[in-house]
Amino acid sequence: MEESAMNIQWYPGHMTKTRRMIAEQLKHMDAVCEILDARVPLSSRNPDVEELTGGKPRLIVLNRVDLADPAATKAWGAYFRGRGFAVLEANAKQGQGVGRFPAAVRSLLADKLAAYAEKGQAGRMLRVMILGIPNVGKSTFINQVAKRKTARAEDRPGVTRAKQWVPVDQSLEVLDTPGMLWPKFEDPEVGFRLACTGAVRDEVVDQEELASRLMAYLGRHYPQALLERYKVEVSEEDSGYDLLVKAGRKRGFVLRGGEIDTERMARILLDEFRGGKLGRFTLELPPAVPGQPD
Image (cartoon, rainbow, N blue to C red; front, side, top):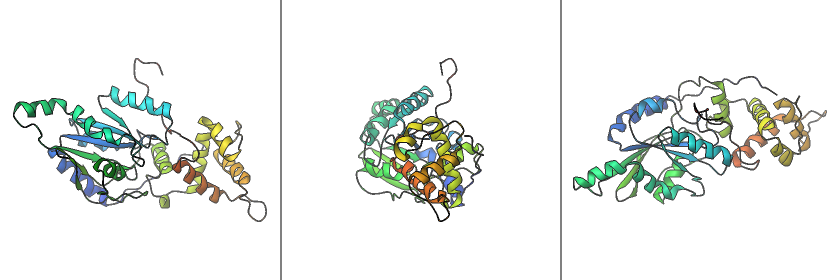
């Protein structure tokens, strides 16, 4: 059921400006918070962030845990903690987990806060930069943390275009930044995963091809979900496109002449995957850690 690789590239010009702005502002930050999509944690991390934020204490927020496979989310949390990051699981849309953000930041910066207190600077303002690729839920997370609508949030990539300072409490503020993709996806699988979650504009992706790839993945890893949602039984010889056709037939998307409207079925599949109607799925697992069992 293997599908051909997808080559997805999308890098709006304003993102070059964003990268420069982030680099300039970092020297004023106490810590960096990365918002990741829990369904694709590694694919939704901009590889430039490591170089840009070198040395800054880091908090990883695994957002949209309500849409991700719980066992996989647990594995990802262990993976990032093993690399020295603080980790917070959240569902920003519903507010789950966001209330723990201030405490997580202060725990991460405990040594710095103790040093401030020794100098008689208790209560000194902490500044945290919030980073995330487009449409990862960054603005929604900030709005929940700030308990008011301060950052523009829309369910499409590329909305936040300028930096915004947002107060969280009397001694903590965050800097919202525009979502930043990277110039080229070296691994085509990264482009596929980001397109599935909506981090890349649908207009630049062949929806039918994307849905076929997603069907192939779900058929391999979550066949029961396809049976329950679309009444489709997965067999060994089925390609992703075959499964798309089967689902379209079950849904009654039949055109004149008996052809299946796979374009319509592709749109339905992607909408239901992104909205959680299909179930809770994770599209990648953590890399194996040397010395530990897989």
